[in-house]
Image (cartoon, rainbow, N blue to C red; front, side):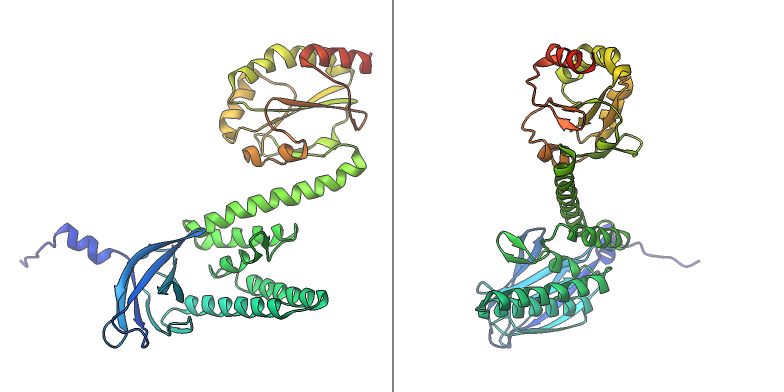
Length: 362
């Protein structure tokens, strides 16, 4: 019988640990320190410092989890000299100078990342050189279209993420149109199937949700000019959406509340429920928008209290379109719509609401 030696657990784990390595050559920087940094959403975190030999060469090995490529950057005296997108098991060979020009082998995604950064640098230079509004507009549109084509042609590559987060300045993103939210959603959903655990994809998901909220608000603000009030189209706990403007009632109370607040839960039973029972058959409805991001907790409250009106919650909390559209600074906040228009009547508490309904629906 053969005998087998068991390796210590630590050695086994080390052997199985996913890694990637970078061989760096900066001929102009012998015996110099190169800072290795990692992108952490919107900041760069220094991972380590490596020292080149007399020929300007160094090697760095890092942990990269399977299915979670990492954006890694090399700096020399504060200047970024290389940008990499490293996957598990990759062995990249980087040749760089001290000014930021570099080449890379062994990492195809790093090459794509480099080419995108070069395109962005050319765009910045062209914008700086433009002297007329027509030149600025033409330069922007050209780069916007080029970036759009790249993103749509490479929906499964993480290199699209830096492109989608490009900025014209500190306050203006390259993808600045409300309708860009549609592109963001398409790319996010595609990348989630390839890199479901990537923190970069999760960050893109949050940005996509923010943009979708902006698109929804922009659309609803346009509709408000026709309707006389900001429209809403939010889901119940079964995922079915109810359009506020589609409710066939003369008087609608848009009630924005927080189901995690005990006092607001009691107001449902003590204040709103008696009024709803009295006036619902005469043309009154409540469109209750909950801002608690815990949708399961909200659903439990609605079911336990047996609230009979329209209850919606999109799970976005303070990012819910209702917050901005109705200028809500605190909850509860209620707005009465009468015959398709926002009521200007001063309504104070449940007694005030009851008196107003008496006047409207008598």
